Image 1 (cartoon, rainbow, N blue to C red):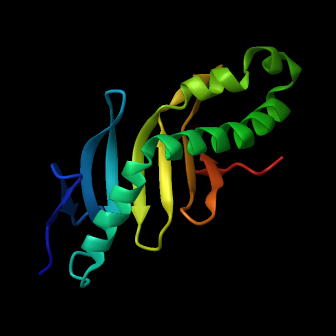
Image 2 (tube, rainbow, N blue to C red; image 1 turned 90 degrees about the vertical axis):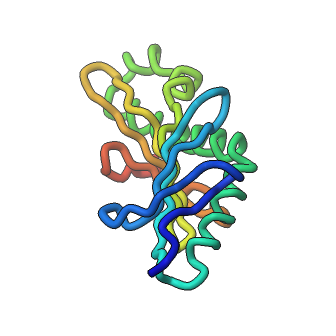
Length: 155
């Protein structure tokens, strides 16, 4: 039976959850903001938990850069899509700076295939709630944006 906990960044404990299929924990991200961390890997697979620990710690060291990249990608993909649906009235209200301020990281998920997800807190525009999630790899950067689980196409 494999390791059931991983200590990341010297003092943050991530506990393995059978139901989730990975290690879960919570960490200070930046400026007092705490996020949920999920490391998807098999504790019984030799070396996999250690690799995920070091993968997370590399992302954590560059967390400000990854947060900015995630926010920029989400804005660049979401704004044209949203404005295309909402029309010109929304253009006067929703600017990139406004949307970027709404994009507060809530969770980081690292998968054993190298894919990273950064999820943002829910926010509303009008009557609709939006839950944005960006995904990509360290090598390619972010390449996918989802809103409430639906892919947002590039416009």
